[in-house]
Amino acid sequence: MLEEYKQKYTKPVIQYSVLEPNGLVLESDNGLFENFEKKNISDIHPFFETIIPILGESIEKETIFSCVHLNIESKEIISDIILQTFKNNKKPLLVIQDLTTHYNNYQTTAQVRNESVINSQILELKNTYLKEKEAFKNTFIANFSHELRDPLTGILTFSNILSKTKLDPKQKDYIQILNSTSSFLKKMIDDILDISKIESGKLDLSIEPFNFKKLLDEIKFNYTIKAKQKGLEFNYNYDHKLPEVIGGDAKRLRQVITNLLDNAIKFTHNGSVTFNVSLNQIRAQKASIHFEIIDTGIGIKEENFEDIFTSFNQVNKNESYKGTGLGLAIVKYLVELTNSKIKVVSNYGKGSTFSTNINFISNPSLKVTKEIDATKVVFNPSKKYNILLVEDSEIIQLSVLKILATRGQFFLDIVSKPEEVLTRMVDYDNEVDLVLMDIKLKEHRGDEIARQIRKLPEPHQRKVPIIAMTAKVFKEDLKLYKKAGINEVLKKPFDENQLLEIIAKHLE
Ligand code: ADP
Image 1: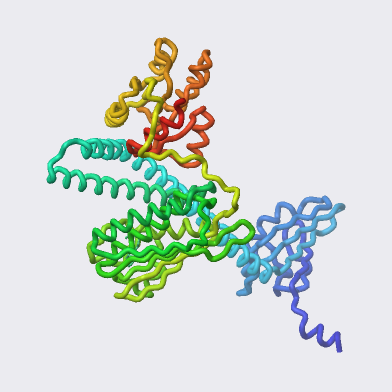
Image 2: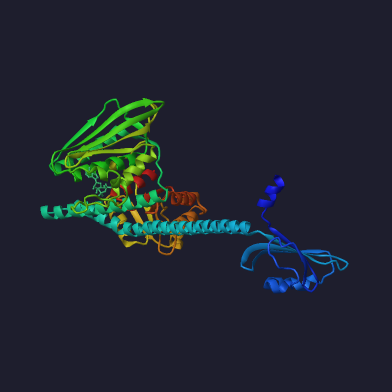
């Protein structure tokens, strides 16, 4: 039975032939092809011409030819061909092995594999391209906003100085417009920089104790005025169970709340804006605090609930609302950095509610490090200070000069080259009390100059407080400045109070 089956189903895949050294086929078992015998092998298929020279070798040797396509008497196969020669003039043996299925499968697999290799290479190229594009975009944004900062510092400083001079009511109005437009421009630049930090994963939260109640009071004060200016009611509900001092990132919390409140006021024309802050719970030194901003404004369609949180997305494009569409993207990211979520519910045409729960550190021993009241920066009245400003932008030179001049307690030297800095530090009789150092000078780097100051021979020279003034405040930049011996960084654009505050902190 088995033999019967074997005979019926055995499919020959191999053919043996014995040849003369000149290529004549002496015997063949017709395993794959018939009519081999008595023919010269080179007449059967042109491939066999290649084996004729080997046939005459009277040595024991196996030669293998892989993946040979044979097309003989309308039968087509892909085969491995083995030619075995022997010593002592024994006739050579030719073995043809049909491996068509094997090679076809192999080819398909190889093809698939090649395609997947190619695809992954394309993907890799795409990723590199995207990464490079991203890096270019972020450097571009950082440099571009840096270039905007010097002129903006000039505008902010001088409109501030101007507003303190004697003005008629019309001029006062103009100054106010100048102030609010330049503040808006500053916010836009800050937002764009934040988004580029977010996209490159370089935005982190700091955790420091701060006076939470004071921060909320300030916000309440500002937004009551803003709402009133638009004819809106502002309600503020503060839960008295809330701890006064908490640990977290005060600056970013303020950014989240003010972005939401700005939107609430912007998109509300009648009615009210309500700001509720309440305590969810305090457990294991963590306070979960609930923030809620409710408005009776234009509302948001449910289909847009997700879109509004993506960068540059504004859903009321046809109406004239000022904005970049970055605020909520930043809010969402900051809230998510605290492992929380921002929620929106809205009734289109009736109003919206944005809410979130954020965890802060709450611990009775938390103390706020002494905050300097910006409006009351005081310097020792019996002293005059020598400030060295290393800066090549005329706008900043003039701004710093004007700000310090209002105090009448400072001598200001302005230089912009490293050699001048070192000469001024070493050769003059008046010791420099503090250095204000621009980082991106036209021909030099401020942090390099700081390094050289730190190597000066006299202790009072090399220990002078150095404040960097720069717009480049990414994490790696800050590390670099610290390494160069810079004490603190004043972010551009700065205003009068920020400059005086930082100087006061470092002068005895
Ligand atoms: P911007 O306010 O600069 O346009 P945001 O990211 O803060 O950017 O907001 C994105 C969009 O979400 C807004 O343009 C507006 O269409 C919608 N939006 C945000 N807050 C409100 C709100 N309180 N009421 C109605 N629409 C809002």
